[in-house]
Length: 222
Image (tube, rainbow, N blue to C red; front, side, top):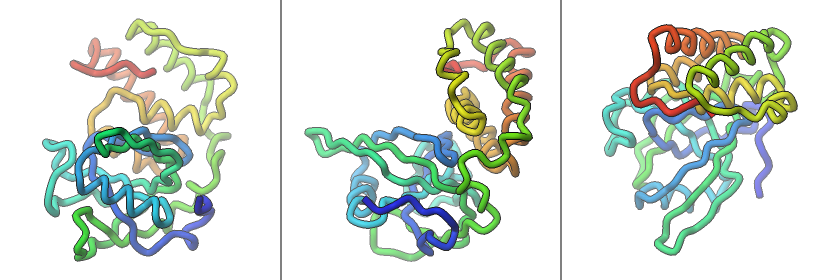
């Protein structure tokens, strides 16, 4: 398997991109995905033959989960490394992407493939290659209190033993990814300049939700 890139210099100039509304991927976190559309099955096949890198990015218009054509995309996405895949009997894939780094979309290529490909840059996101970068600035006690309050608010259990053994960066990023918020909020969390800013943004979103009595149709943070 190709090794995980360790700096922006090791990234390819262009990558296949998977536009998916409401899907958040962050560095070192894991995003499971069911792949069933032919264009994305072909994308996964190509990634498996190559460097296993796929860019996950949200479309600007979130009314469709995965828009067809060349619908405008957000300017920032996250590059994922395909670390696990399973094939089903009907030709579908279940895959897991491990977040590598955020990237800025520079421009889209004109290609013959059914999936989209874009030129990207990870300049400015060098810290994403260091798993624990920014942890010391995060108020972990306050963040964990938010988790405890939200678990009580939404009436679900958390594995506190696992939480205590999880690093702060991994904990913040995991909670952001599984948080029950919409595409716009997920993009804000993705684009947070620092881990501390991301943690504080999620705390603010969660406190606001609890103050107003819940998010309609939201899944619990677990």
